[in-house]
Image (tube, rainbow, N blue to C red; front, side):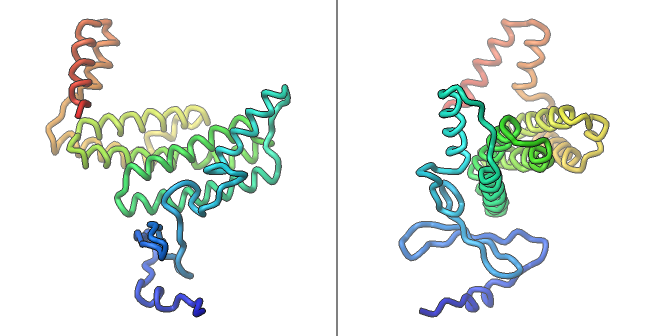
Length: 246
């Protein structure tokens, strides 16, 4: 069997600095993602773990870790990630990163959000059960970036649904999450100058101007609750519910 991939590389030129991704149908009919790299092509599954593995029968290594922690707690034992578990978690972080940026490039925003949520969940797990502060920080340093990408995806998803107000709400929610991240790591003074924060604010301002949105219903609800105007808050909740109904 001819195993070289010269034909694929020649017909798909690598472009440095650009995420090049495409959806391809495999021989067995399933859909896979291919990502062009400088030295070849990376292929990933679209569901479950990007490499298609099922660690110890679980959909992902994160799911396996959660089961191990649950069993340890049930047995009255404390749980701390082993060296092997840390290595496998690292592999999963990297795999989901590659797939997440592919989903963004392909404008598959709901899928990008799912993968970002998986990564944030795994980060939360590491923060609780890491064997060392060094290992924790090796991943915590990227939390802001994952929140940023999830916020981008969530806002774009709302725009696609013709809901610019929803997009603004997602942007504001993401900025709140990023602010908490900066505060947790005593970096509040860097928040306003952060490039990702500035980008999300520019997108929010652009949406407000393009669609002439002053305050969203969600913002009006927050204001009503803050003012303890619960009757107004109830009316706004009803309107929000009606908008969300198909």
